[in-house]
Image (cartoon, rainbow, N blue to C red):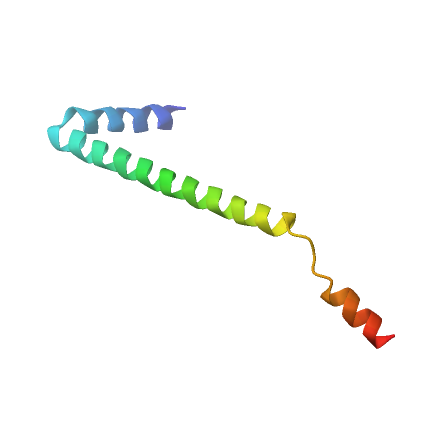
Length: 69
């Protein structure tokens, strides 16, 4: 718990300095942009997975099995 308070004090001290505020805002905006890009990628991946799972299997395997018999 004391380590958590120490880290919180460092974070607050960084916010109090003018340079720290700019860096913090830039870091927050970068993190938000990364999170949005990751979300878009996950949505696209889920939609592709949905497309693959909703497509019926082709009858090529059934036709090749019937031809071999």
